Image 1 (cartoon, one colour):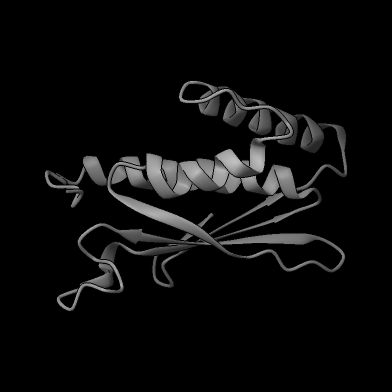
Image 2 (cartoon, rainbow, N blue to C red):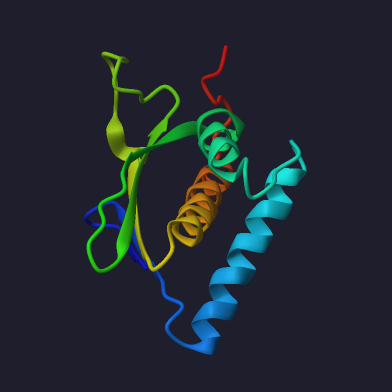
Length: 136
């Protein structure tokens, strides 16, 4: 779910029923396959590779995990910063920066889903005519 006014993306990865568990596992498997295109990813290296991919593999920006609060469920909080719109850029227009939050029963499912959301958002900037991604 997207709340464009608040510039936040929300989702919930729940495995409390069979359909939810299938969705969680399918999402995790899809992300593992995607990560394997660039590097050999295993369950043991999943966290390392997700962090690396959000920081280095995106075309138009970088994302970082800001927190993983936990009570009955966990939540993955991620901030995406558009290149050329970064915090250290004095002329920054934060219009394309985004926040993502995915609640989850299992943290690895939440990380997989937030990665999908971040990657899809980053790819959507290309359709807006992003020519210069800001990398040097």
